[in-house]
Image (cartoon, rainbow, N blue to C red; front, side):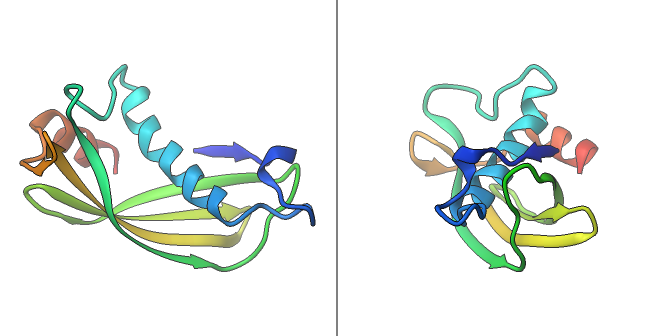
Length: 124
């Protein structure tokens, strides 16, 4: 997924504020579902929650840059999935994170619905 860096994304020095890289990755994950006319949930009390993030800030990006977010599956289990998401500025990797998502229903971990398993496997 491509992201354009806007003024609102930058700090006082004109560099992308560090938490925005996490937001860009969240948008890319959501787009996997939105592109298919779905939401990453099957009800009001179910959906994916972040259990763990390991992030690396590797380079900077600035106002006007075009970034590309890539996503790969590292591990797929019954109720969780670990993804590697990277943000690239042309040939330079500026951010990398491993994110563990757990699917919950009514606040408790449960099996990832088959429709979501199929989307992840087909897309990533």
